[in-house]
Length: 339
Image (tube, rainbow, N blue to C red):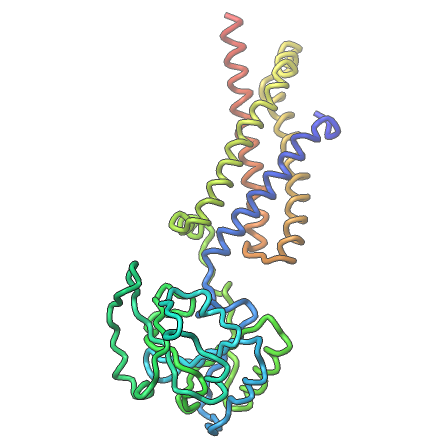
């Protein structure tokens, strides 16, 4: 069983390792805690340190940027301020569409600090009725013009959210937590630094701090359509490998019988096969682990280094087990024929 004569099985092991690592990496990634309000990984969260300057035009500098989104959570339950010139929350929301009557926040609204707002209500399938959600107990919304209704299924929704208001129509004295996000990292840093001078501290967010065990991620994936599909693909690939590996071992049946007929014991022959099997798995495991570690670090790696190594080890145990079962079965068949 020379390495040069077994390139196929080594290649198969490398491919299997890579597929399982990619699949489980996706499953773990889907189960991590993500930022609120559908923010990207660039987002920055800032919390008031109670030393706010609270000047009337504190946040007017935001109008200089048109490639950002800013959400200000207030100390009023269910109320947020929004500056969203990119309008992505509008495009990704379930809403009413009525030309001439219902709309989204405009740049004129932001510049002129118009008192306009969007309320959150459950929109029925026929888009005609909504389940009423009371927001009249929030003093800041009195006198507001309501320009649209978003369903809780919208990407901007967060538990308890009732009203989205033009950020510039609110007093900054009510701002408690601010979220800023942009694809333009340079602008993001500029805005963050300016907001810090207004009395806010950055809050670090690390989605890996609350990582669940891998087995929990796998179980949770069963309730997620996309993660479940990927997991099914991983399991199918693994089962296919088991079948192909057993077929691959069958080509050594003759060699196995000859060794026994020449006086070798079953344990000696099996030990030789297991040693070769282990060597192939170590080679494939090292190649796939190093390659995937580098590759995932360039994309997004969710698996820990231990889990990354654990996958080749699991496949090694699988192949060793099937080697033992296959040749034990072959030995049993030989004894039957020799009777």
